Length: 386
Image (cartoon, rainbow, N blue to C red; front, side):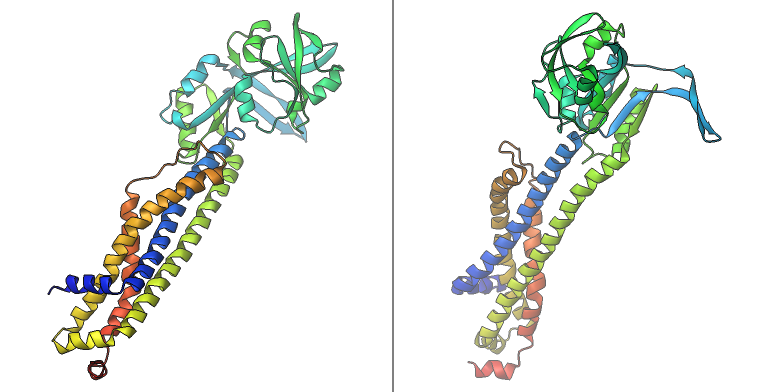
């Protein structure tokens, strides 16, 4: 009779203990698989949400300036060459190699205008992209949806003494105040927002743009690489990453990853304790069986192989079942954590090899000592049990 046949018969004979060992390992493996998939998908989802919550790259026209302070007095910059950003530059940004990492592009055109004898800044924006970029905006009234509707900052409204649904004249064109932006504590409060194409048209700016804000998904691509590629397609622009914003976002993501690794380590320890306890108890109860093996001439290495084979066979099935259970469990947990019922859960099929490998490794490491202890049993004690 071959050694693996003895191991299989022992597994079938001790159904209760085998079930306990299989269940413990299976739950451990499924927990690690589930944690891996949940961590990966939640991290990706959180990173995407954080990246869309404000710009992390600013693109401005490149200029050669000379500015300095003299005796504590700021001297105005002297520009002797100036480039301009245009609508076509937005299309160029979308052609970079890592364009899939570009979440949104929000162009802006600023114009200083006099309305009701008061100077005020008008910002031409892509309303849809701006609202995606600034998710914290709260608007009274409604979001401008037509070319003759505009959005007022709270301070701009006070400055011009206007109210919601009033009509004002800008560059000899009439516009309806469709919405009022709730105070944000930023420069947006003192600005009037209009569709960028309208600002370009009524102020004769053609396709000019003052600056472009970009929200780049930097979770799986270094932001420096996106900046480099963008600078290459826009040689006449300054492409500047907002490093503080990027670092704070990635810190939040990495903290969740570290938490996941910590939980995985705890699960690993618990799994090894389950296997160790089960196999060690089994060895203590099999003194008679080990005595028979020794009586018929089995070597110590044979006894160790029999016990380890039992553990590895159970570990193999636990790894496969744990993988399936982990996949099923993650399909319920990921939507719950991300609060997104339609999120697509991504996982690699190669994870099945990790699951089996993890289970076999835990079983092997935890089963070595009990198996070794079985080989060290005193033959005299073993024979008395016969």
